[in-house]
Image (cartoon, rainbow, N blue to C red; front, side):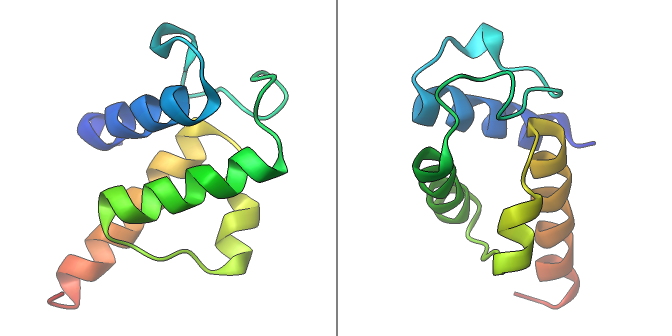
Length: 86
């Protein structure tokens, strides 16, 4: 996993959910972050799309259930964009 992407995702999660950055671990999920609700989830998706210049499908949005999974999907989408010459 790209540590730069993970770090940026962790920064965004901390910012969106209003928690200390040190509390955001790769295994953090909606169950471990009290402020991670459906509205904040959508705010996180928008922040991720803006930060990384990517778009998530509705199915992908539902899959974004941990910091680690988010980082892996962002990395995958960025790789696809580069491979497609965008």
